[in-house]
Image (cartoon, rainbow, N blue to C red; front, side, top):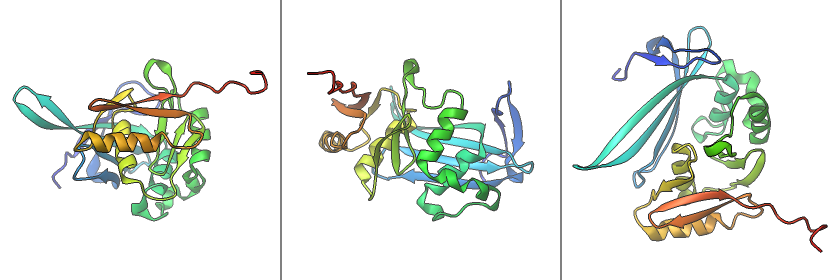
Length: 225
């Protein structure tokens, strides 16, 4: 095994950090990677011997340093709720709807609407982004703003998935770098995403970057006459 064995992680609802021996844990990996993209979004979930769940989030980024481009890979470890783990696994095609026996009682949370309702009610700060504004949530199939569905994909849309993964890797900051090889593909992707019917968010190409923003509320037709 080449990865580190002992890591520090942030426990749920407690101060400080704790250490865990990863060699005593079961591991479940979720990853989406496209060789043509600069985005590598990986989630690894570890189940400890005392039935706690730890999320390892790994983000691969391109750093434009003075001596040229460098790949930086960062890992963050934090304890998480098993409901979140069940939701992520059920929404990943690798596992084909299967769950570890220990998570089977949480199968109902594979439904994104059920999970979002629980998360917004239970998890402190869930969905809060920059300046406290609500940020989108993307689970690989459905994208939400709060509990509002922006779009639920019925079939694969690789370019849109790639851009959504780029925003997710950056924790839905206002703006991300172009994950494509050319500006034309970014423009076409942004145009397609702005055609989502009744979506509460919109996207914009800003040169070599893309940005997202919430749409202003529609005027109340009953009061607009």
